[in-house]
Amino acid sequence: MISGKEFEAQRAEAAALIGKAGIPLQPGEPEKIEVVDFGLGHIRVEGLQLLTMFDTERVAGRILVMTPRQTEPEHWHPPFGDNPGKEEIIRACWGEVRFYLPGEDTMSRGFLVEGKEHLYTMRNEVVLAPGDTLVLEPGSRHWFQAGEEGAVFYSFSTRVKDGADGFTDPRVAR
Ligand code: ZN
Image 1 (spheres, rainbow, N blue to C red):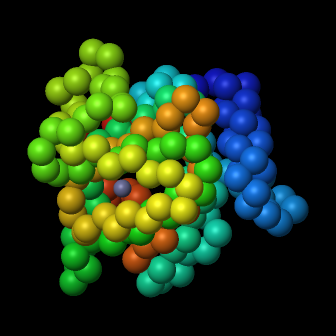
Image 2: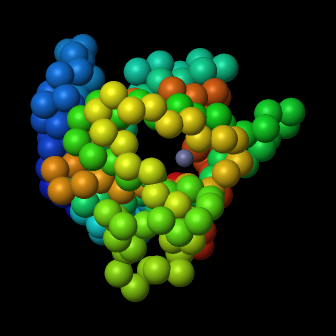
């Protein structure tokens, strides 16, 4: 696990990046930013910060924030009950974020986490700039990574069940 101090620094940096993106927050919301290290213990390398704007039984909206060169581990959102799995729409707001999806290897701007190359199997690169939109199909494997300055983007999705997500890296604890 990461230390409390590291966690707080990460949260403060995420709040500052949301400010740079020009997204207004309610008082008290900066304190609600979740810092997720996936149990991997190196938040600056693999991790994510997120703020839930709304989350009902059917839809959710979140602000996702990545610090510079941070990578979200490869994962997918499996079906549950009669739900085919989370369908997610990404809308980029600030900085560069790169998504890696099924398909031909076109990776050129991004990089694989050192020593964990085999745990990042999707190599079809989609680079999003502010204003770009990407639809992630339910059940499809993906991972993403911020550019040199970090990135801020929205995630709008059908019902969220983070605990059900599958990860390529068996060491991930969500
Ligand atoms: Zn996802």
